[in-house]
Amino acid sequence: MNLLMTTSSCKSRGELFMPKSAILFSKTFNFNTFFSIIMFKTIQKFSISAAIFLAAVYGMSACKSDSESGPDVEPEVSNYVLYGATGTPAANYMLRTKNLATGTISSVGNGIELTGKLRDMRWVIRKNREFYNLDDAAKKLSKYKLEDNAFTTVSEIPFTHFTYLIWSQWLDDNTLLLGGNSEDGQTTKYVIVNTATFTITKTGDFALPKPTKGKMITACAGIIKDAKLHLTYSYTDDEYTNGSYSSDTSYLAVMDYPSLANLKLSKDTRSAFPGTARAGAESAFVYNNDIYIVTSPIAWNGDNTVKPTGIYRIKNGETTFDKDYFFNLSKLSNNNDPDGLLYLGDGKIFARNYRDENVTTWADWSKPIVEYMFIDLAKQTIKKMDLPLSYGASTTYVYENNKIYFQVKTDADGVYIYEYNVAADKLTKGLKVDGLSTVTGLFKLTE
Image (cartoon, rainbow, N blue to C red):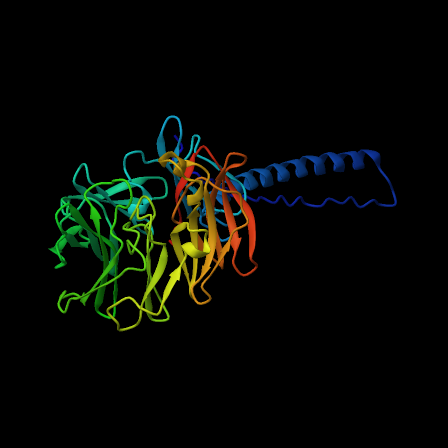
């Protein structure tokens, strides 16, 4: 199998400069002399031309070698990465391309097969070429690296502290803070990893109120700002039952970091399940020096059918949800539950939205009921993309040069990467994806 989707070419150039010949005719013309001159010049020209030809061939060969790193040739750089699944036989592939706006890419005979290596990308932490994955069944935390033509295991360590990577934050270039829940669902925990040596340097439990009998506690999101850790959480049923899974209340704990002292607890009932509870899916960000948390009562997270999806604000220096601010996203989206957000900066969000009104059974979530939207925090408005309904897909997108790239999959067209130009408010159908039944991860390498 060809492990790399990209191709590269070298433009070798050889130029043959043929010598000019001229015959000067005298006033007295002698045919024999003329013929002799012609034969001599022909032989001379042939010899010189042959020598030049051989030199040119050698030169072109040298050019081919030199041009691989020479300034005359622009390398084919495939910095965009697509991760997704095939249908039959079931497998996972990572493909690389140099362009998301045009062309076609296929997993057939191409890409890096990663079947069984990575969890759903919503629980995978990525830092450029590095990927951090928790394998709950094998009880190990793995560090992978995407090379030019391979996906290699850098290191693995035993990991029994929690079963999912719920939230994370980089403390510095080589220090990763992980948050999760104990396997019995009775405590929320943290683990600090030195990613350079790939060793665990510290672990502990957060001192949050224990759940009552028949309930569990789950962390939803975590973010450190101004030496304060803001941890959101929820209490849930032991297992899914008819009705709601999570409670009707959102909980917030604010404490000093790294001491975890001066714990402040508060709660709010305007929404439920404050965060995505998936480390690879964004749910907390800072705008105008305030913290914003997107709630997720959608079926596969909080599964609370009563409370709306919305955005809380924690004002700078405060330890509670702002009582004067709640952006009700469900109210503007026909009581749907937007998720899979990408914070673009400047109070702008790109998100997907599942059309809840099209769902009557669990299998309906796998049908084309997804739309995309552009959200403005300051104006509290939603703009839906003028696209056909799509099958569920990636919650990771590429955003660069004020353009967003995301997957749309329909029965009519198959899988495409679309481009949304934010400034021009323009949608364009881009890269066609063959071979993959869905794209669950989309990102750009920065080096």
